[in-house]
Length: 201
Image (cartoon, rainbow, N blue to C red; front, side, top):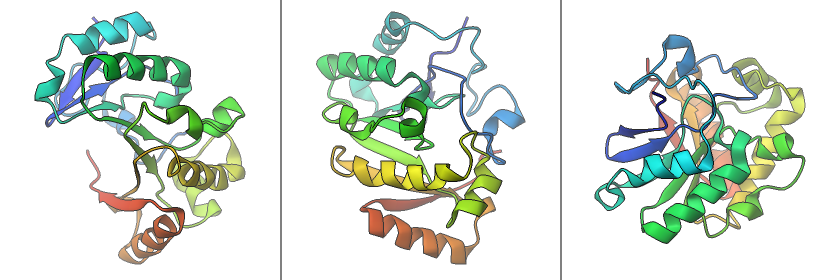
């Protein structure tokens, strides 16, 4: 049986795809098939929107702090489906909805995607992880190459106009304190806030 939703602390996480345009050096997928004691997150196939909604509806959402689109792939690989699921959740519950993303949706879909999040997504958390294009490509290894870094920054800035809360993250083990401070300034210039997150082994 596929793991479509799973608990992390007091949140419910949604695993809709294993596709991702990046191969981050710190990616959890290299360490096994599950995290936080979940069932295996490698999907036999991508679940339908109906299957995802059914899995979410099995939880008592109002007992949880948030619903997070984050599994063993990049959620915006299925952006239209993700937003259909988010719309369903908004009709049924007041639970806040977050997307954890690499911020490359515009390159994936060849359009400005931030406006599509308005009214459906409460928080967008974008992986920053570097202070320049070259370091980003070395750490994140995006399939889109050197243009990925600037595209990620543009997406983040655009999200601030459509999403109430925009966060950028860096992983502690791949950034120095000095780099983290530079990342903090980058976030401030975009209207986002920085979160330094621990590496999860």
